[in-house]
Length: 172
Length: 127
Image (cartoon, rainbow over all chains, first blue to last red; front, side, top):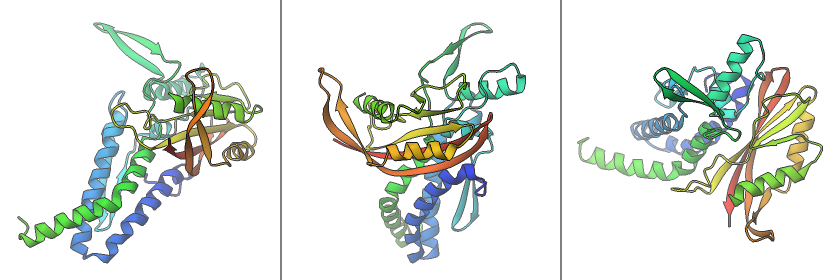
């Protein structure tokens, strides 16, 4: 989600744009209240994306990072190179004799649950091929952002109430 | 399952000049152009908490003109809804509709000699 100039990221960017529009209501609040609500929403979205990231080796799920750029901007990113294949469900080369191409293709097939490695004994593994992918999680980022975009107006109201109560009780 | 079957039927019957891979992956990639459709991300079919919204994920692969193929797919979706049919009992009756709320096209660049574009088709269910 980092490289907004890259055309491959347009989909996610456009979802984020829609989400950001709903957050513009925060401009009417005091900076402290807006900051409080935005932090809650940013970390909530981040947690949901992490939770929904499919696991094969755990590398993709552990790759997520959140960074506060300023009071109003958070950056959620993941440098794992095969994220794009999992999110969009595209695959690279068919299984070829070229080891590099074969590695990329296999990585996709395992990440999407089309191939599955099952332990059959000590140091023994069996590879299972699922004709219909068993746990394909295509669109997990887009679906999460869409869901958060829908519930944001209600969340803003709830968190604002929470902030007011907290402020009135002296931050306790 | 009716939802998934209805989406599969809709795409499969929509254009017979397109090589469809519906809910399956084209392992061989032997054709000059083909389309992979994932009919549902299973949100609306979730047994514990089914959701009204879902996503149909379409990947369009072409060695020559990917835009022309994308145009073909988009023209299929022009009605903006897909009928949900009841597949039990022998006769196909309409039991609801899937409305297309948004289509987003993403350019995924060049992969293995193919130009690839993704269509994220956002849907909402009405029964």
